[in-house]
Image (tube, rainbow, N blue to C red):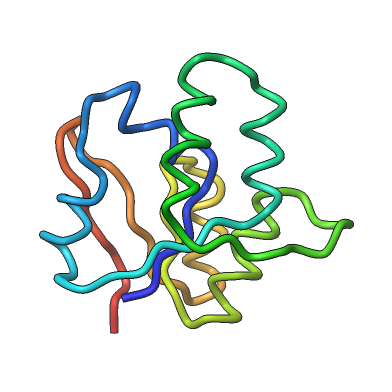
Length: 120
């Protein structure tokens, strides 16, 4: 399964002490994480300790260059559509937008585990 990480999803392991890779492995077995360049830019602009840790985590995944005119949320959707992947976000608005676009959505439930809606 291909999954595209939103900014808040890369911050989540440090805020809620959840093992992102273990949870993705539990959900999908084999998976690939993609990080849009706009998400990296957002993390760089935050500058907090968690953001620096999230940038280090993101360096383990595939980075996808986004068109410069796109905001991070737009870019997450664009990448997910381009690769046929799911959107990983806890952002309620982005989750609804992704579902309207027919994309699967991975999000955190109960501050303890990940769930996925819409996998074909």
